[in-house]
Length: 170
Image (cartoon, rainbow, N blue to C red; front, side, top):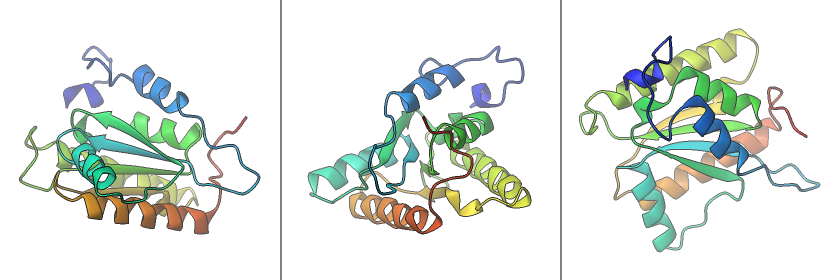
């Protein structure tokens, strides 16, 4: 959790550095279609949301085509910079899917993630951008149906909003 806010970047977590996250996002370029298809980056806690995604898949639930799952050990390890860089290159929307309050393995990681999500949505709103492009939801590992519903509803919202003005596309 400390790695996400270390100003000197002296504390790092393998697989969750700024470069690691950018590389993971870049490994899944947005879909190339003539029609707009939202490109969504979903930062998912390995202990809750990733398991809910796996359950959704096992249940045969449809997930949005343009979603890219970035597995993190805890949503609290996602920094403000991770969120902003995901929006810039080239996500139309960013989701943070974390554990329920009181059920976080890291104890407060979900609360830190919530604070960061609120901070970036406030900044986006103040800058005249759609704060709805960032969504934080809590999920348990046994919530496969809810994972599918949440990701599909978010994709529909991003479809309404259209391409992000922050995204840089090739």
